[in-house]
Image 1 (cartoon, rainbow, N blue to C red):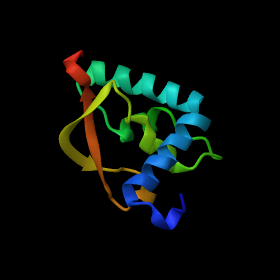
Image 2: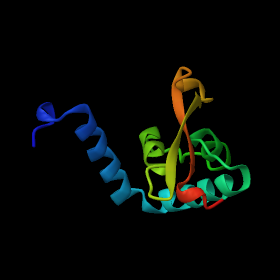
Image 3: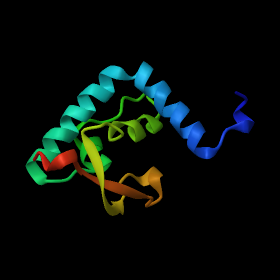
Length: 102
């Protein structure tokens, strides 16, 4: 499928799939950390994960978009502001554990 024929959602999903295949170790660690934070605080954002597990210098920041795209987490319906400077105060989701298994 040619990139120009993809919707924005399809392009995003392809990138997330690529990260799932190539960044498994980082995602496994980040998701475990996110789950622990969620159990302790009741919710988690990528800010929380990023503060405790910095992104390796050679890894593109888009991999962070895959961290909370896991069946353990569900979007709470709330948003907050990304804290890192390069985000330009972009809104990010607040997540909880699916099924309230805190």
